[in-house]
Amino acid sequence: DVILAELAGWRRFSSLKQVSAYAGFVPGQRESAGKRKNLHIEKTGSPLLRWVVVQAAWQLVKRSPRWRTIYERLKVRIGGKKAVIAVARRLLGVCFSVLKGQHDYCEKELPQTAAA
Image (cartoon, rainbow, N blue to C red; front, side):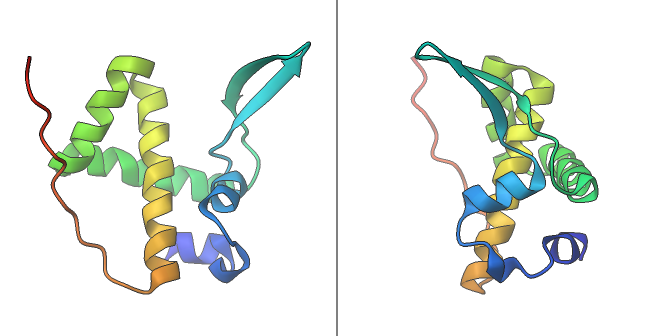
């Protein structure tokens, strides 16, 4: 309910990129002399929406094997807190896709990678 209320008419967004930017889940960038540096996430947009999606991401990481796997893979590379923000951004994408496509969410298993 909070996601629907905070997006205030999800049809006004044409892409996930726009929704992520509205929620403040996109990193800032600084560019000079052809060099680009990614900064922390831009905390623009609705703080309530961002908070709700991050809290939902933490719960998914605890309860869902699929989302836990995604989180663990990211955590190794970028650290725990950044990983949960990345999971939250993906979760917002899933919510937006479900709203846009008007279909139910069906969690699928991730393909297993071959152990070396």
